[in-house]
Image (tube, rainbow, N blue to C red; front, side, top):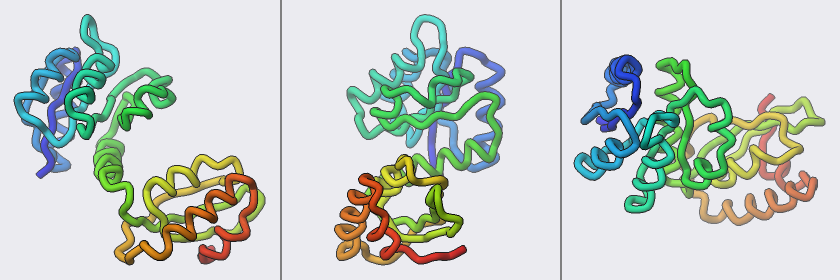
Length: 200
């Protein structure tokens, strides 16, 4: 069972969030109410995930993120916030912190927990589907998580989503896909189309 700590200065939000986590079988080891609590509770329990609010008096969520990541760079942290700009934070992105927007729902929480663990092994292979902006066809291919992230942000890509994990060994394929992605960055999509299959 995945373990976590939950940090928010609003007791009601902590209670509600913990209730939702219990439904999706995430074990809450401890609760805290500011960024300093987060750091202390992380050191005490070393949970699989930290859920923390961003804006809290005195010691905020960024305090928690920076101090936990400084000592434990592989810590998995999910920021739960009503701040619409948080998803664009370069600091959070650079520290690999996922964001859940308030108001939250159980499906978003479950998906974000899944995403956090997908991030854990960026070299594992995943099957994706994507569309180019100028093409109605839906393509599918197998990539590493890092390649998926790079493809998704290309201006020529309209949509890109993970279909699921892929069990095949990628060693002989990864290098070719990387070259294809490098060319796609220069708007040359010939190779990536060859490495993909049209599925719709």
